[in-house]
Image (cartoon, rainbow over all chains, first blue to last red; front, side, top):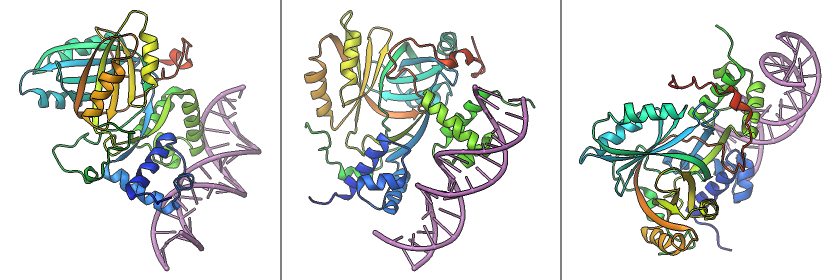
Length: 176
Length: 176
DNA sequence: ACTGAAAACAGTTCATT
DNA sequence: AATGAACTGTTTTCAGT
């Protein structure tokens, strides 16, 4: 069989790490068919380039925040970016998405109690400049959570990432 | 100063790991003021009890799925659970939430192209039993992503977790 | 890709509470 | 009984060739 392309080596390293994030480089090297050193160098590169990230993920409930809520926010014209930055700076808010549709922003937060959530919503979110309308949606159950990471976090603009050229779109079994 | 309670030791270990998930046990032990062995034993316990999880998180774009979409789904009465299970079984779908409000389910997926998303939406999601209405919302930008983990993944019922008793709700500065 | 030194890890025992 | 600390052999990591 033909040998893997460089990007496919990277992807198989990532796929194995998703399955077991804490395996040793030696074990990983055996699975992907490279030496330990190669795997380590590739991993370091993938991390610095931002294509792979490691996370320690606590149970929000264990950390004292069992109430999981999603806020849909309609912003005043032109205020969206500023509002996103404000929300992103709030410790209660863990995720902030700029989205299409009726609402412009979706923000997700974890709270100590439903009362803490209500207080945040009415007293803090409601008073932010640029919020025209907001709805809260409580998460009752998380049925699936397969973490993926969007590279665009904290990325300001429109750079042209190197991997763009390599994106083969064949990965899914495909569609187009 | 009084010494930390056991649960506070656990929480400080978790907080340090969130900051740097790949630090060594030795470094972590120094930060939280425990021996390496104690830290290792506590971490193992936290992981098996499900209060701490590690993840390797790839850039979805690098893996060939740059299109990030959220589906809001209204299900037929009584069909919600079954529908959630079906969605959770689909590889294109990474997150499935059971929520309150007009829609019952929010599902999040990563796709190879907007066309692949459209195809999934119209041909696969639209044909599922129990889907009364669905909307798609495209994610334009992820402005913040601070991973937290809901313990209820893959948990079937209503067990009474040990940590429930210890939850002091004082963690946030507080509210009640 | 291989080698060797330094570091971290896993397992055990002992003392403390 | 459960936890923390100290000691020891083994494995992993990492830099240099």
